[in-house]
Image (cartoon, rainbow, N blue to C red; front, top):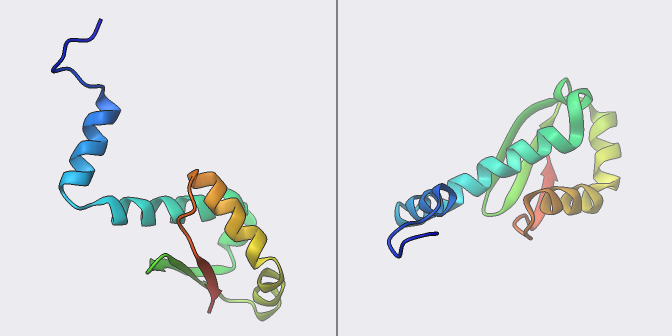
Length: 96
């Protein structure tokens, strides 16, 4: 049975992140992890850089053919990443 002043570790971590203004950085990091997990090892060789700015994922792809193919499935990739994060965090993906 929990006492009134006890909280779980996950609650304490969430509280710490929120109180220190780190929510944005944690979510951005989760997006980068989601990209790696959802796109797999195959895409690692074609991905030069990843970063998130203003809830937009920027992905630098070193192959024009792969970049073109990914642009057709942009909305599906966005949906998979947001589902992985269990919230509608990303608004767009840009391939550069």
